[in-house]
Image 1: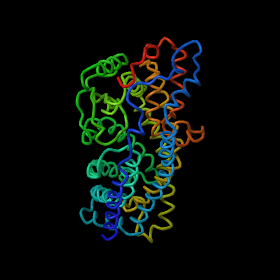
Image 2 (image 1 turned 60 degrees about the horizontal axis):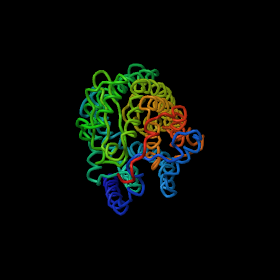
Image 3 (image 1 turned 30 degrees about the vertical axis):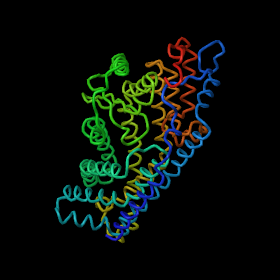
Image 4 (image 1 turned 135 degrees about the horizontal axis):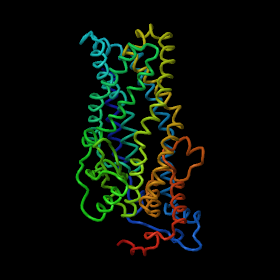
Amino acid sequence: MKATSMQWLLALVLALCAHSTLAADTASRELPPGLQIPAAARPGPDFDVDKATDAYLNLLSPEQRARSDAYFEGGYWLQLWGLAYGLVVAAVLLWGGISQRLRDLARRLSKRPWLYTWAYAVLFLIAYFLLSLPWAVYADFVREHQYGLATQDFGGWFGDALKSLVVSAIIVPLVLVAVYAAVRRAGARWWIWASGIAFVFILFAMMFAPVYVEPLFNTYKPLRAGPVREAVLSLARANGIPTNHVVEFDASRQTTRISANVAGFAGTTRVALNDNLLDKTSLPEIKAVLGHEMGHYVLNHGLRGAIYFTLVLVFGFWFTHRLLDAALRRWGRRLGLADRADPAALPLAFAILSIFFFLATPLLNSITRQMEAEADAFGLNAAREPNGFAMVAMRLSTYRKIHPGPLEEMIFYDHPSGYTRVHAAMTWLKENPDNPTANAPLPPPGS
């Protein structure tokens, strides 16, 4: 109890200290609203893709670029320290005897394996949440405010964190009950069955999260009437996407980022735009973003991504199986752990799986980045807004390092870099110089 109190005290101190850094100047970080087309990005006989790309990259001031690089490169270390913190939490749960006591408590509640596994999983999630809270406060609250990317006060942020905990406490124990049933019945082949269970869970999450989970964190309402709505509906109809649920949501209560998504399937498909996108960008930019998101839907990236992730997870569960059994043979008796079916060994399994995913980061990023590149190409051809696409890439580059090296991009980027995206947009424009937006006169500044 004393350790938990110290964790809460540290979290509170970090949250209070954050208020000294909440004054990050968001306006100086962001690019101004509206579409900007550099002179070098105008079609003409002397149009040069590289010069047009450089002209867009120069929209960022040296200060904005330095700040973006610092945030994104800091994220590389954040992944490493996040892994280290998670391993420390797992060690505290195991070597501190917390996990074993939670298991014993769960078994006193019921002798049925499925029921005490469920009870242990709920208790484990609560304990893990409390022990991980200081890191979450820094990584997700303090740091985001330092870089002007978050808008919530601590109370709002913590309320959303508690909602996430409740959702996890409802869903994750059911998944773990199924996985541990596979461990008991399939023996050494449990990892094969666990992969199948994970795949089914991912599919259900894709179907139900837009309808039942995401509205817990934001207010969704029909997309406001006007040119944007008509453009979005037209783009959706042209690409065979259901238009029954075209909505906007109030992401500005949490973040300054722009985003949109086309999510769900089997009757739950929803086209959603956040209010930052609507309020901070131009119609060509919005069309470019929606063209990209609709590309994910049309190209079945949701299902393909679930399959790819599950295939990686097969190796992750096998990796966990081999190392977990070896670790239990060495330390199991000393820690009071029976075998792989003992739920008290979950922190150990979780730590091993975390190490696997850390090592697999370049592979997972490459899989996602390839699908993002496909959606980029689809969006350019669907929306036909290369300058809108380039401008959005520049907005995202205010917090994503814009021009990494090839190896850096391969390892750390789950989306194409800003440079790659702007260059692709300018290449498309060179092949389609009659683009109406690129040839239209620009409105006066500030209009």
